[in-house]
Image (cartoon, rainbow, N blue to C red; front, top):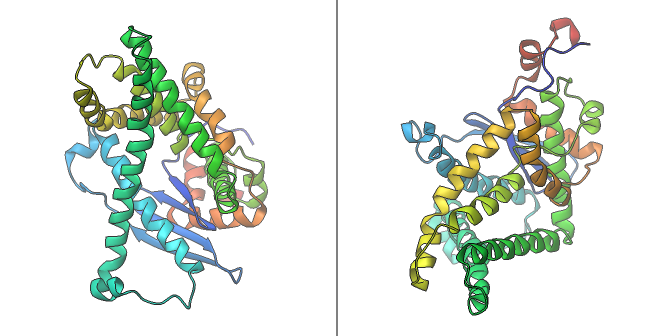
Length: 316
């Protein structure tokens, strides 16, 4: 069947969770999880974002900051939901759980996000800067030092994702990550959403969070080259203050990559796709089934194919 376009952006995105996949379409998201008994549980919810209705969420280079925050919040929320199917039923309720009541999940999520951000800042911002200061005695070129600092940051990031990939649970998470990408690629290339077509689709996608993080690394190198202050404390403060700026710029790159399929954009996206060889793995058919359930809960893929490709009602 001839198709009108080689690639069409569906607008949906998602992430892998414990034994499942979350898919988000506008303000609706679905979490599909393969339960211990083999059945697939699908929960559909709405998430409106931290600044719902604000014009700031529409401004280029600003919207990426809030998109990143929303991704963190929703990511922790959906991971917590998927983990609930595998919690120890004999686990006792703590005094803190009793004191907080229904708010305990929200408090735990907020605490998790804060700790995660602190660890990320320490590991990927402060540590690379600290290690690069040992070279200041030998290297006087500030731009070269910024490049070396960025190289250290990238190396730490690569070591981190490679080491956690050795964990059994993370390896399965990466396979569900691959299933998520395969579903989106299947639709955006104009194929019906079934297990056979999804399995044949690519597990690499230009809008992936892994690619976003790589863009963050690259953009940080460029911006930090222009921080010309001598005070070590001010260097750290400026690096922290620039985090939202870096996130905003990186988001626009990812957004452009997801909508464009030309040689230049593909070339820029290539390093991120290469990195996804670590963070995505080939799923099995049962994992793909879970991902398809998640897509179908929030996205009318048949209408999408009819509107954007040469399909009609009789095609399904």
